[in-house]
Length: 118
Image (cartoon, rainbow, N blue to C red; front, side):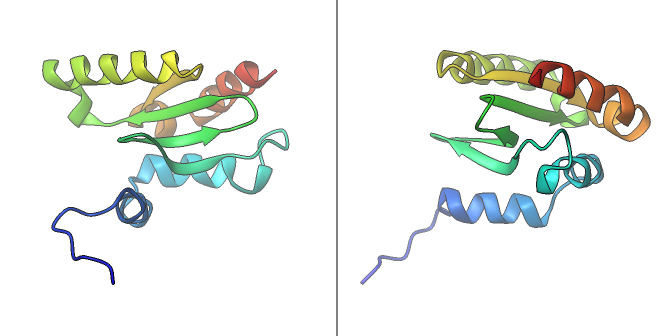
């Protein structure tokens, strides 16, 4: 019998993040899902330890993070930097884009991702 836990599991957190994705995440996922970008598979809301990344490509070890306004505080920038160090130590490449980048310059974002994949 499973014990009830007051903290959600990583699987539950990932599911919740997928259900409550931002507009920018929705827009980018529409372009990445189903191998739409140069036939490369991406996952969304993938976890590494206690971190959940927005998008991940296993074949290229590429993480894509979409940063909203919450990432503009000093504390968030420090946390993002520490998180990025951990991910890079795992051999991953991290690309960051703002919500504004995705919503207003999607072609540029997709081009940068494609360049990183080639």
